[in-house]
Length: 154
Image 1 (cartoon, rainbow, N blue to C red):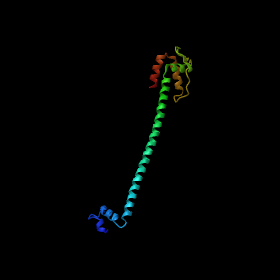
Image 2 (image 1 turned 60 degrees about the vertical axis):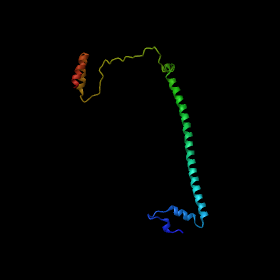
Image 3 (image 1 turned 30 degrees about the vertical axis):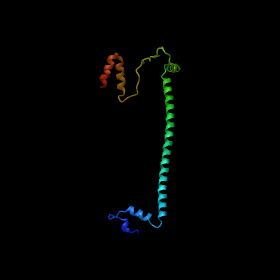
Image 4 (image 1 turned 60 degrees about the horizontal axis):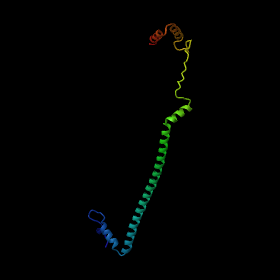
């Protein structure tokens, strides 16, 4: 019969073989065998359902990724056609004409007249000395005025 010494080994570990023989060899052995089979079948069914659910999720994600890839490929082709259109010489000329540019036309240049009077600046920390210096420089020829200003600014 079943006792403590038959279930354990000297290292106090559970002897599964002895436990299984005692449970399946008892008076209700057919009931225990049926229960064991039901437990094993239930575990296998759960594992199958879990795997099939995971496989279904992977297939759904794969289909979604393929749809997104198809959409991105179409968008890429559309963008490549648009870039090719923008780089075409005819399109560039037409766009330039709409902006008012005409090929072969000389560029418009405007000369700004030089002021006849020295530009008056707001009073600086130097006060009147700056305006006197500008009057003095204005009477000197141009290259010398630049040289004198450079010396004075040191």
